[in-house]
Length: 163
Image (tube, rainbow, N blue to C red):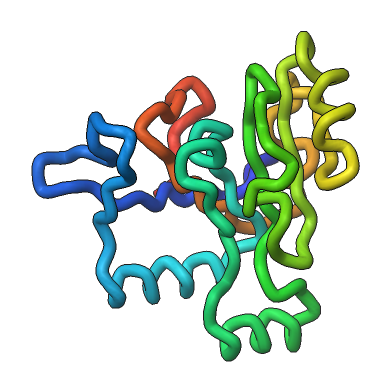
């Protein structure tokens, strides 16, 4: 295996290819069957990566939702939900956001060097802040599969997903 986790890009798009609307209101693109599929993917992964904009705009919990899948993870020696990972350049994240406030799992914040001190002050009590130049392999290298759930502002410079 390469010296990085296997990455899986998971996102819903509209029929015309959009991830979101141009308005402030969140555009819901998934039905119950798709949400169940996403839950199964999350349950099978070691960590899940979203951008800071997704945390600010969508306030996701990023948890495995079904009890049976949580129990299966626990039986295998894992926490009920995967590790949560985000990337930020500005460190303007609310420590009370669902990303940080929900789920008994590790939270990692990869941060630009110019704002790492501010990020540690603000987010240190609720997450581990990691210097971004190690993005994102250093802390997730031992993880087998990491899904990326991009929002409309996804930065493609991080590399292409495996799937």
